[in-house]
Length: 192
Image 1 (cartoon, rainbow, N blue to C red):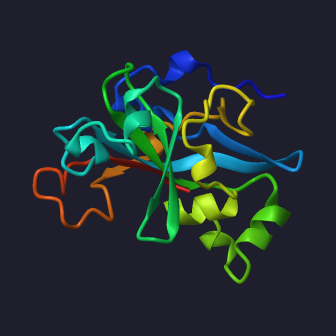
Image 2: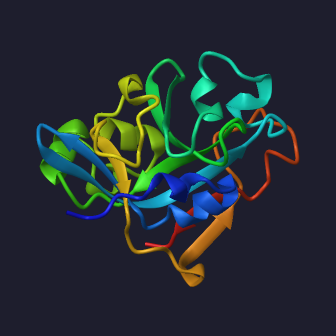
């Protein structure tokens, strides 16, 4: 069985973690079957000073997980309809997380096809809400330790993205945020 990333992997600056998660494998266990694939797009959110980060308002019931140990899932509901999966980074006490924006689905394709019925294969997991729908991830996964199999959701070692294959740009979907946070290049993806 592939090796899961250790908890120490997540204890680093969120910008470094956002890059280094590219190519690692997100896995969800559904009825004993593996569903998931390599992470191909991430975004970094760092601290209370980052006006696009949920922690900008300080520690709340919703953001408490972000202040916890690295490697925990931060799952929240947005726009009244979508779940988003993040991976907490940095040392405990500093609120930072990586939004997992997309994966390349390689396992559990039958389940993903059911979850994303009527969508083309290219649209199965190419956005954060699509990813959570495809892998049946909801708020029940908030706080799950992604460095163990205990919560049926984890991240495994994969093939790390190379610098030549890396695309860096501004985060998306944060239109109401002022500069420099709107344009700061904290979105990372691999060329497919």
